[in-house]
Every structure is written in structure tokens, then in C-alpha cells.
Image (cartoon, rainbow, N blue to C red):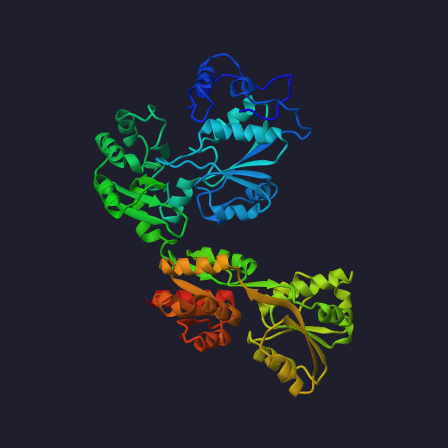
Length: 561
């Protein structure tokens, strides 16, 4: 467990019975193993042959963080805060990779364990935690579920304690509690179950529960919840039956609980193993035995959503795609963000700079897209000015989402178009009175419906490019081809004409075949027309041209099928 240790004193780890039993996989040689099995205190640098370095000025500390059961929305607020400040994250195989978006600046090390696969040894993980902490880095150990419930967080905390390193434990929602809730199975119920037992079905080698122990558990508790027991499910269920549990007791297996790929199989206890084997369920899974399983028929809510289990592709720009992805996951679907366009500064910023400097000369500033708002206000800040620069100018937006984006900068729109397209904004502006001077910050390339209609009614309109949309990198385009070739996409959400153009430019002549079984969903009439221009009729068009309206329409479509 060597690291940057000071020459005096040496790091000494006190022996504990649990420590002496840990596997020594990953240690340098047999002599190190022999030393670890000794009952005397250990000099870690001497055992591992690590060169010592001066102790850092920054106090050593590690955060043991529960990642929750799989749904990234179930991580705690404290865990998000800790991840945001992390410099190094050691993550488990069962922690959602989406949680790493909360720590984009951190170095990520995957130390997850999977049965039958090459995995990091626990001693090696402990060593990394100690080394990194002693370097003065902010270290997070991200563990699926709760770090202290069958997650070996206790072992890691002891190793840190023995090394003299401070630690903090951030609890997480445990996987059996969350998975059963998402399956519509309450673990306790006043009339059905007043007790519940959590037990692991995957103990240390040579330390598994004996059949006799499982038999004693059979009738000692109302609800039995077994984690990671799929490898031994026949043995476990036979032992519970031998212990006197009624063969007709309802039971369930929940695989990948809380995630879009969640699968739930129910059966009587006597036939549970055979049923789930036939269904192909494997770990990670939770086995639930008890009368409460009967309630699933009435209480199932997550895997009955219209979009549950669907994979929805988002060809939007990455930042917008991430926000939309959260909304999609809330509806039970998996979201795949593959930007077909990128948003960047225009080739010539001079017109935007000049327009912002003359902002108070306009009667109206019109935003037909939320994308223009951030670069517009970035330029305003660059000129060391604030909302007062608008002077007498009023502000109009194309819809409530664009209005909310504007409000983040302290400006409330004076006018919000009822129809979320340029035509609706024109109509709303014309209803406010006579002609005036209008500024339209927008994309470098966009439809000219708005400025041309206003000019036709006597308005003086200045159109300036606040941003430019560009084709996505080749890697994203290659991944689009691969995902569609694998037939893993159920629907594509098109939220603008530009996403349509770039998607079909990427697919080329292969589009007809690759999209044969894919639902094409459009946010509104302009985007739908872009699809028709590409030779495809949209299956779904939103009644209300917002992302939420589009998802509502998509749910209706799948529910009707």
C-alpha cells in the first residue's frame, strides 16, 4: 500500500482478524503475502518496496460515497457535491457511468469487480486509496448502492483508519430497497410483512452460509431479500424450502433494478429458480421472497410506463442533449446522446459586438432560439455591461423554454409567442403596435421567415449571428451508424431542422434501411417538413412544440401500439 510516506515515522497498519484474511492478489511477491499473514504490525513501504517521500501539507482524506442503485437520479445531493469537488474517483462496476458527468475534471479509475472477470483486488483498491490520499488529492470511492451494505465499504474504511487517513461516509440508497420499490414490491406491509432480512448470496470463498443457516432463516423473517444470489439460486431456494417455507410463497427476481433495462420475474418459491433461469436473468439481481411480492400485480409503476425499456436517440448538441436525457430517463427510457451538430461562435463576431454595444437603440430584441441567449449575454458581460443596457428595448421570445433561458440572466420577456415557431412570433409582434427597430440574434444559417415578415410590415430588422451550427465530429457519426446497425435504437427525437439535415447527411443512402424499424419523432411542423424533405414521414409530431410535448406525443404513440 505504498505511497508518498515520510521516512519517520513509517506508515504502520495494525493487524486485525479481518485484515489477515484478505486475499493478497496483486501483491508483489510471496514474501509480501507471508508478511501480510503475520500477526505483527506491518511497515507497508517495507512490505511493498515503496520509496518514501515527504508527507504532503494537505491533510489526507477519502470520501466513501454511495452511488445509489443505478438510476442516476437517485444519487443524494451530498454525493453530487462531493463528486463535483473530486480530483480522483475510484468507481465500481455497478455505479452508473452517468454519475461521472458530475465530476468532469476528475481522474477516473475503474476498479469494479465482476464474478469470473479480471477485477481489481480489494487490497490493491485499499492501496490506491491510501496512496492518493497521502498525495493530498481529493479522493472519492464511488460504490454502487450504499457503501456499507454488502459493498466492502467497511473494509475500506478500516484500511483508511489503520493508515491514519481521515474519511467520510456518504450513504446511498441501497439496491434492494430501491429495486424492490421500482418493481412495485414493498418490503414491508402492515398486514403482510413486519420484518425483512437482507443477506448476500455471494459470500467470501469458504465462508458461504451453510444450508442449515439458510433453513433457519426460512421462517425467521417475513420478507427475505437476497443480493447477488443468482449463481446459487437453486441452492438458496431449496434450503429455504427445506427450512419450512411454504412452497407456494410468492417470490421475485429483479435484475438491473431502477434502470431502463430492469426485468422482473415472479413465481412461486418452489419454481422460482427454474422460471428465472428460463427467462435468462443473471446478476446483478435481487431475490425477494415473501407475501409482499403479491402486491406487484397492483403496484407495478416503473416498468409499465409507455417508454419503459425504449432507447431514444438524441441528435441534439451535447449540452442540450444531456438536459433532455434526464427528462427521458424520468419516463423510464434509456437516452443516447449522439450530437449530429455542434454549436460554436460564428466566423465573424463583429456584427454581434456592434449590436450589443448599440442595444438601447432598438425597440425589440427577439430571440427565436435559446441557443442565441448564452453567447448574446456572454458578449454583454465581455463589454462589462448588464441588463440595464437594454434601455427602452423590449424582449420577445419564441416560447416558454426560451423565456426561462432568458430569465437566468435577469431578464423577463415582454412577449412570449403562443405558437412556438417564427410565424407565431411574427403574429405576436405585429399585434403589439406599429413598426420599430428590431434586433434578431440567431444562428448564422436559419430560416428568414421572421425578419422578412417584419420588414414587409415596415420594421427595420438587424439580423446578427450569435452562434453557428456545425456538423458533429466523425466519432459521433460513426457511433450513429453502429447503433442503428445493431438495431438498438427505438426512436429518434428531432428537435430542429438542422438535426434532421445532419443526421440524414451522415446516414446517406443507408438511411432507408437503417431507419426501417425506428420511430421518427418531430418537435413541430418545421422539423416535420425537414423530415419530409429528406423523404421520410414522421411517425410522431408534438402537439406542443416543446421537448415535454414531444415526449408526451411519443408516449401516446407507443401506448397506442
